[in-house]
Image (cartoon, rainbow, N blue to C red; front, side, top):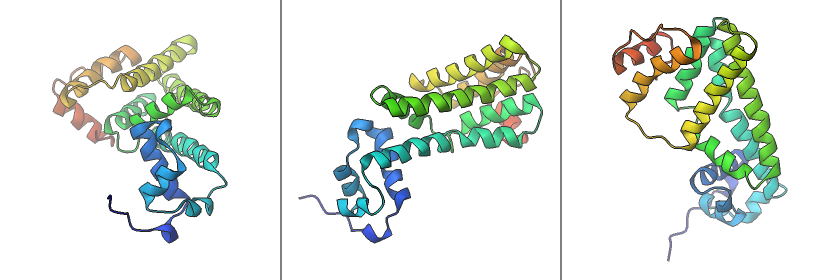
Length: 213
C-alpha cells in the first residue's frame, strides 16, 4: 500500500495548487490534470481545493495566466534593462533563451499542446504570441530595420525559437553557443560575434553584457 503523503491543507494557497498543476501540465499534459490527482500530489483533500477555487476551470485559467506571465516577463525585463540600443536588446533576449532559468520552454510546449483541445487556451496563446512577436519587432526596429525587414526578422526569430523548442532539439551546449554568432549575423546583419571562435568566448561575451548563459 502506498504511503500517504502528510496533510498540508492548512498551508495550501492558490499558488500551491497552480504550481502543482503547472508541474503536471509540463510532465503529463492537460489530460493528466484532475482535482483528485492534484489533491493527492499535494497531500490534501478536495475540500481544501474548494477553499481556494470555485471549480477546476478557475484553476486552469490561473495556470494559463501563470504561463503568460512566467514565460514572457523574463524577456520583457531583459529587454527593458538593456536600454534603447537594439543590439543590446537582441543580446539580452538571446541570453534569456540560453539560460532557461526563468523561461521554461517545456511550459510553452505544454500550452501549445493544450491549445489544440481548448479554445480558451488557444486564445491566451494567440494573445501572448502576438505580444512576443511585437516585442521582437521593437528590437529589430531599434536595430535600424524598418517595415517588412523588421517584421519578417521578428517572425523568423520567434518561429525559429518555437520550432527549436517543439522539436526538442538536443545539441551539446558548446555547439549551441558556437551557433549564436551565425544566427546573429543572419538576423541582424551584424558580425560583432563572428570573431568569437570558441564556446567559452561566446559565453564570456554574454557575461560581460550581463546576460551570462
